[in-house]
Structures are given as C-alpha cells and as structure tokens.
Length: 378
Image (cartoon, rainbow, N blue to C red; front, side):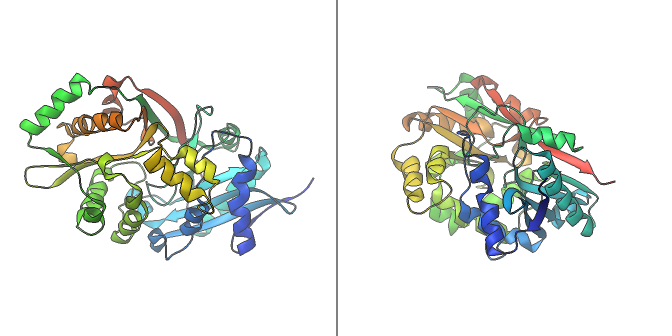
C-alpha cells in the first residue's frame, strides 16, 4: 500500500499541486464552479489579504506517493476566537479523492498544527471571514454550484462523519423564481416604510463607494448587522478596503439598493449580482487568455438568467421596519427589465427564522444545505 503523506504547500511546486487538486476531483462533475487561481493565491499573500494580520493560515497538500490527492487550509483566526471565547482551528478549502485515509491524514495534520498553536477544537469548512466560502454541501448535489459557496462531492460529509466530526450549524440557500410583479405584501410594507418610517432607497455610483465615503458606511453597517452571526468577527478598515477594491468594480450598481433614513444614515444594503457560474466554468479558473471575456459577457452582454443575492444587511434597530420589503420593491422590476428569471441567496443559517420567513410571499425553495462540522480534541 502506497503511503499517504501531507506536506505544507510552502514551495512553488507544492502550491501548484494545491491549486490543481480541484481539476482532478471535479473533472467529470458539471455542477462544480471553480475559483480563480489568482484569488486563491491572494489568500496566502499578506500584501493582498489583510486578514493575515490577525490570522495564522497554512495550506497543506496530501500525496499518495508522488501523486497529489488532497488539500486543506488550516486557519486560526485570533480575532474570532477572542470574540467568541473559543480556541478553535478552522479547516478550509478541503478537497480529497474518495479515500477516507486521505481525509484523515489532512484533518489530522490540521489538528496537529492547531494544537501547536494552543487550539482545543476544530471546525469547518470556514475561512478567515464570514465572506469567505463556508460549509460543506450535504444535500442537493445535483444542483449547479455558485461563485459564493462551496460545491463538493457527496462522499465528503460521509468521510467526515466516520472520522468523528459532528454538526455544529447548518446553512440553507433560498432560491426563487422572480415574479413579474412585486407581491402585494411587499408593496404594502414598502409603502409603510417610506411613509411612516421615513426610509428611502438610494442608488450610488462606484465612485461614491470607492472614494465618496459610502464604502466605509457600508462596512460599518456590515460589522454592526453581522456581529451576532455565528463565527463572525469584525472586519478591519484594511480588509474593508481590500474587499471594496476587489468586488465593487464588478457590480452593476443598479442591482445594489441602499436604504437611508430621514437623517441620511445608511440602515440597509442588498448586494446582488448576475450569476457568473457558467462564466467561471468556461474560464477554468483563469482570467487569461479568455476568462475575462466570459465574465464580461455574463455581466454586461448576455446574462445567465439568474442573480446571486450576495448579502443583505439591516441595522439592528431598523430590522422589522420594512427595509427588506424596500429591497424587493426596488429590485423585482429591475430584474424583470434585465431578463433575470431566478435568484438565489448565499448560505443562510437554518435557525435564522426571521431571515428565512421573509421569503414566504415568493414561494421559495430551501436548497443546498451545507454544514459546519466540529470536533473536540481529546
């Protein structure tokens, strides 16, 4: 039997092996949506990932003989551990062939690495921030993946359960068919929010976000709104700036409604984007030579028919006052004008009842259950 070894991806050759593992795992799986290799490389570069200022991150590659057969990233987010009073090492970006021994070797390596840093438990898949991909798919493997969430084969969670990992939390994604008219309930609540609460929808330019002060307002709102959410730790100004520079140029700002109160304070934001899943598949994870063309075509020339609702944030004191209804009231007519037929959210915690029940007038499907696993160290 050929020995399985795990090595740090600390050389150019091993990092290349790390990057190429998904090509082997997903070669015959049409639902998989790749990350851009340049984005993965940036995760390990302190000049491009401000989260490394308060996190230890280590990528590993598993080999069977000389053949790469799996990968994983160990993450110790000191800020999150301090916020939640934990001593947890996270595992992220895990991929492995259908061999329990490979999964065991990868996760044991992360455990040993975490123990050396004083950690007492492991959880994952989770990254440094709440905006990184998180959760292992445990249902609906037949559905197309997306650019904002992991896709994985059905044997992944089976191996983790056999290795002693148990459920910590589950997320669900909400999928809807976009109606031709705003449902009456949303229209009524949106009118109440405008006339009785004094709220209004505002659209701003890329320049206003990047240079006009709205970028800071948005991330201050996100930090405030997401503070109670599982695993979240506040984003630094440096992280916020990095996210803004990376993602704002990709956005159609007509699809990003902001909600302000009568004092001009930002109390809500919804960030949505035409689906780029097919474009990412055609790019094979590379911007060059033609990845950029497929992206631009899906964003601006011929959309893929769907929209990804990347995030929604509402200031805590304005939750339940019609902010979400204003988002629907604004976006549904725009989606129709642009020929967008369906929408899908990012992962939502299954116990976030307020968030999940707001979709009821749109007859939602709750799909793509994914799980954060946990294991205490003995």
